[in-house]
Length: 109
Ligand code: HEC
Image (cartoon, rainbow, N blue to C red; front, side, top):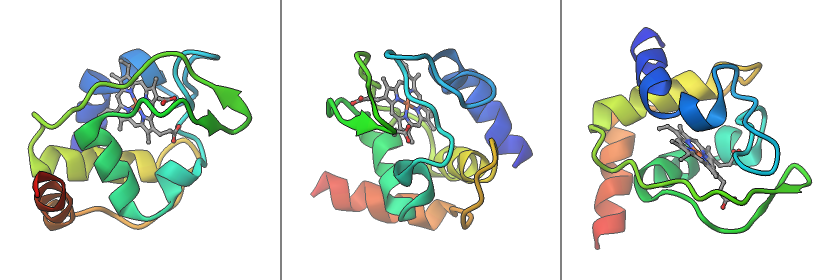
């Protein structure tokens, strides 16, 4: 969690804000969304590939696109996913580096 917080503050906070609340119409909140709390593959894939789907998230559309963060290590992505899934009122299972590795390999193919 501590390591994940550091990754979050460095790479995610500028857009999603310290408390995960996002910025209206630009960057979505990370609070209890299906992307954050669902299958851990979803959040790992979003971090690796970025996200620009023009999707509706909790009744709002967001104009910004999220860049891919595939330069982060499996460990950093596991830590930040665990942090996000267990912060801001969220509660979901932890993510370990081997989960990230599996998604990374699946994307590459
Ligand atoms: C440049 C700004 C930016 C950065 C940096 C960024 N995001 Fe995002 N993120 C977005 C935007 C914009 C969307 C929505 C894209 C869309 O509507 O298609 C999004 C969507 C998401 C979603 C899915 C939607 C939701 O609200 O649940 C998750 C999860 C997420 N980001 C997590 C992260 C994590 C974790 C990091 C740090 C590793 C991060 N983001 C870094 C802008 C950013």
